[in-house]
Image (cartoon, rainbow, N blue to C red):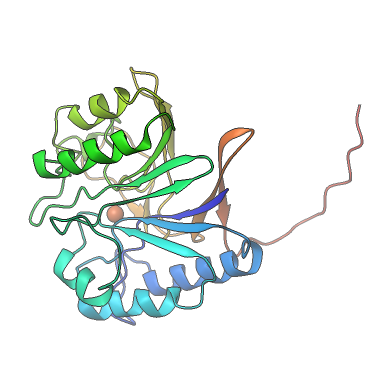
Length: 266
Ligand SMILES: [Fe+2]
């Protein structure tokens, strides 16, 4: 299957700028590129920080931008989001019995889990007992199928100074719970850090983040207050199939220079 990931769209009310970047322009360009090149995708996942300040106008804008996409969409909340404003704009979006924006999707490639790590007033992520109870049931229901996890906050230690105190505040409990799933975790897909990262946890679970669609960081692992920058809007194309799981990063709006020859080997 083919999944599109967009992350950290940080939408503002129309015309407003966030950290020097126009988030609406970024997302519209990314979605136009996706519609043109990946209309055959099965699913779009936006891994949180949908909106920068939780404004109802920004969620209405998100709804408008995504309106014509021909495939299923799952939206995750990040720390910048507002759950009440999101639910008001997307009343039919799947959520659990406690109102968290959590759901799963069963596919031929295993169960996809969409987790909610948003907690109002907290920049880091929270994944407490009530959310974990839902996850226990979702993992049990996956049975002998592997799971692929989508969440805003990285449930792994990334070593980035700026994010030291605003990561998932759970002392590794979510990662440990996932690692206990007998059929395994194919991958954990997240956002939050606004730079691309790929790695493997000490438990052997592969993970990666998408590049932010809106403003992103100039990569600096040691500075507590790094600089934002702009750039082409980005998204990822994630395949889960007989090759395993592969995640490619795409940029909308690139300028072609010269065309490569066809390489027939050897
Ligand atoms: Fe963000």
